[in-house]
Image 1: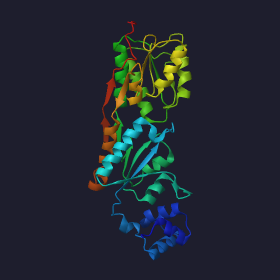
Image 2 (image 1 turned 90 degrees about the vertical axis):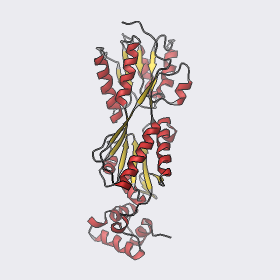
Image 3 (image 1 turned 180 degrees about the vertical axis):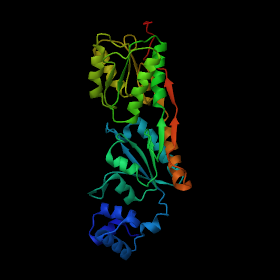
Image 4 (image 1 turned 30 degrees about the horizontal axis):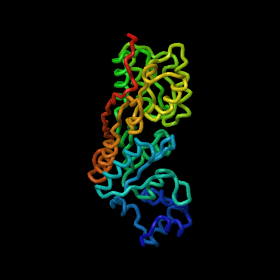
Length: 336
């Protein structure tokens, strides 16, 4: 059996997370604890980092965390990560999910990546601004971020700006002037881009964003969305069209609108975002923007493996196009 970091930790009496960090930064450490770990590693025959660094493990890390806690049941992320997995496995790589634990001990994302000796990591997480995520992105480990641009790392983006602009322009083409936007939580590059583009698209159409027309909800959380829809329906100037943060929100919005004895789209038009199959099966069919999650996942795998195997330069950004799906939830509005 090969010697593991756990073996070294037990030998020298140092926590696994600390051993992982010291061994992976072998050449730059010193001190009593460092020496104790190195001596134990040498005695057990553990391959020290200066020798092992050049050996690929054919193991890719996946850091996946999104705030709605729907996990891999979320249609967009499920499709994206399955495509990443398929592409990686076709190229001979295994997949490891990254978390904050090494055994029963707490560790940072970076410590877990080093402990698992991953060759690279794809990050599809809700909070790219957290200290632990930023620590990983600034490390020596090759990373590809999904829907977030990172200096000195690679990014795969969905064209969020084009998606929001297409929705606004389509609503305007059907006569809508009072268009509102319920967006997701403001802790992501995705949300900020969509808000900024909504303002720009409305300005380009010479339309105002009226008070109460731009409000925050949370992706995938219907309990937060419903009261926001209800408030909009009772504004002095009710919007004729509401853009929702995602397709799942359509379920909650439908419920509120029916409770108000209004009809979709005769009395109020709606649009979603994502293009998930569920809402395309509902009646009326949801007008939405379809994100190409499969292409995003495969492209993330290709970029990451290119960094690992070919030493391709970091800092690249690939933007994947979106598609407007003209469903049945935005109808003609005689406001012009």
